[in-house]
View 1: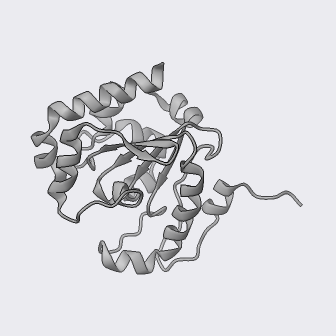
View 2 (view 1 turned 45 degrees about the vertical axis):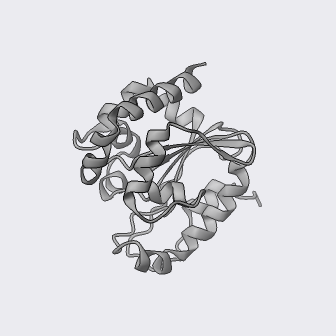
Length: 195
């Protein structure tokens, strides 16, 4: 009998109490140098073509603006990046507290993922919650803006974390506060991707 890969195990997970199990995790956790980590997939990402959505079909989300600035396409995403979320499925649960209990198994999967993240990866986090899952951040949403304004890379053992804001309409105020810094960070990521 064949042994399941890590990603196959995650995709088969139905251990939590949410209604609709569809863990959205893509890529090769061992081989791929880049990791994209966000909070949780949206309902649209769950119900539509994930990669098409990720690259941008809704103008109010970052994909239409940020992904082209990184110079990446669907083929690159599928072959060079491990895409994951703190919560693997679209939980449709109130956040943050009830979700931690309802989706506790996701946090176990994340602990397993972290073991792979420590050795020479470039980890791009989208939002405070994703960053905080790897690096302690104050709950104050303004704190992530301060971190973005510093334009720094955060060490994670032998890997590097490059934090970005959670790219959604609800965070437009924070994005506008540090638009210049975000452009700098996107340019830095683009150079890492294409060099």
